[in-house]
Length: 212
Image (cartoon, rainbow, N blue to C red; front, top):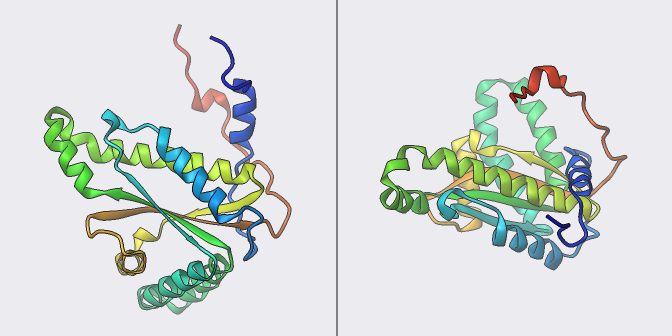
């Protein structure tokens, strides 16, 4: 097989391995909103899903609206986290303010209605479709995240669905259907510090087995 658009596997892997979790983000974006939207649309146009059921939905929130969204998150999370302990709230609230300081949010959802319809269409796999949906969502996340980093942006992925009141507040803010389930929240913006170095990984002897 030949090269696709003059891109080799090594080049693609180099691009993917450049992605990092970046917490120190500016409230600016050198990449126009329309370009970010274009990247998301491109990913949605080709990223795979089981049986091509396409359960992934994405919301892009930018600029002042991103900060308003995080105000809702902070407000909804405060009673939950303070209920655990003041030290927990104090620690997390400062992190949340950092996320609020970024430029934009990309919210990854699962369409519950799509899952329900897929279970009826593919009854033999119905018990697995929610898990397959998670696989598809993860692929969309990594593709969008990597593309943004190649455009020169930094990003970090959060999972605010861990707190149901927060997920409810985000759903209300975004005006999404009731059947949507939040899967991940990608904050992005211009890097405010040096790009993080590659973290240590386990040896291949622990993570890879070849049978031939």
